[in-house]
Length: 136
Image 1 (cartoon, rainbow, N blue to C red):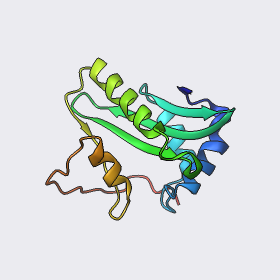
Image 2: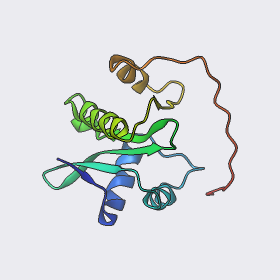
Image 3: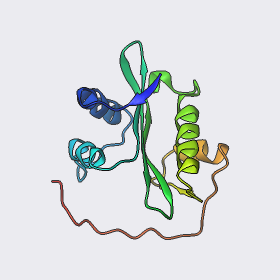
Image 4: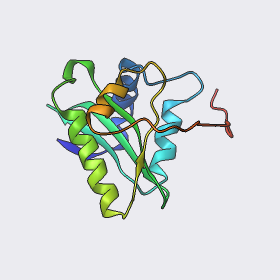
């Protein structure tokens, strides 16, 4: 079942992100959750028998949509959960009038193949970033 994130999910979500190797020392996952809760776009969890087994954050800035923290517990991968979450994100963004969904995948992350199987393509772009707030 897909539902909205609830604050009591926090520890389970952070543990899931750690199992899925999504956390990094320079990003405090608790702060990422707090920051996400300050916006109006979805943060979903997929629950199986009361346990959080997947997550997805959706964003939309009026120009492009984005997804972050798509995570599926390794024990539940290859069961269509990520596809369901991505489909729901795409439907949500379409309802918002969003013309394009962008996502960033770290180099070497095998999720790139998953996204390409869904029809996403590699764009010839360079991502530049600068930390404005340091979490560490």
